[in-house]
Image (cartoon, rainbow, N blue to C red; front, side, top):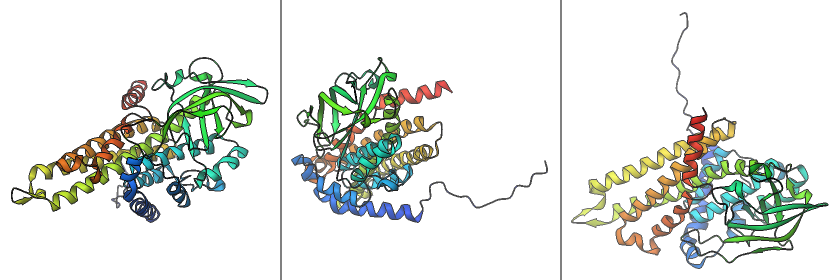
Length: 390
């Protein structure tokens, strides 16, 4: 056909740059020094380590993909999944909160006007001001478009009334990005507001007693006649559901990354355990059944990581399939992460069940990742709708 084909050296799409490797290493060191030694105590004491979060902000982890013009690090979504996986090797609960804070900051950066961005983002990027994402309600979990918190226009303000449920960081946060109904029922009647901590009429329920994620507070956020300036609305009226879903695409990647980081820590603990412990006259590492189990655990994590990187790249370049790929990555990584952590606990036997080994905490922390940012059943719905619409 007259076409000359010559061989060329393949370029790996998964080869990290020197800068990316340096970022990974820096965050892993921070996780190992600041998070891991305290993770069990924070979990048992239900302690939210705000001082450590501010230290993370000093490393640029408070606005990972926020524009550097307003104090952010200006990194990509691909970079962010490397960061959150590395951070979660120290404590998945704290890493997950940092990822949610970043989702809030990213939404303000993307949809806010210049005044809004200058007002809130520098403090959020340093983590002097913490953020919470307020979408879920007691009667509107997976069916988020059915939310009933209302925002009624009153001159230069909106008056908010309603309750949000399962809100991470609530009570300690300074900035709440809130989805509220300003119009008709369904997704087109929802708008997005920034509500500052300390606003009159804003209150919180008690800290929930949870299976995991004990190192970050989870409370109801209650709005009773909360007056919010019109200037605090993100974007136009009626596009709040679009804003909320756009935030969740990236949030799903971040939670997927946190699952991989926690599960990788569990796998690493298992590798050390089988090398050191003996049974029936042999090292556990010599038992083929455990060798195969470890091989499967590593393979599941690598497969999930590969899909996560693919999805993050798609979100960065605006691939039309990005939402579907983010759902795929979230589903696979959170299922694999929990499975691997659970297998790691089993490998440790009775010791895995003891708090001091840290395995049971990782299992508890990772279990909720299959529920939040959209349950994995909802992820399957998003994926199947994308396939059938093609």
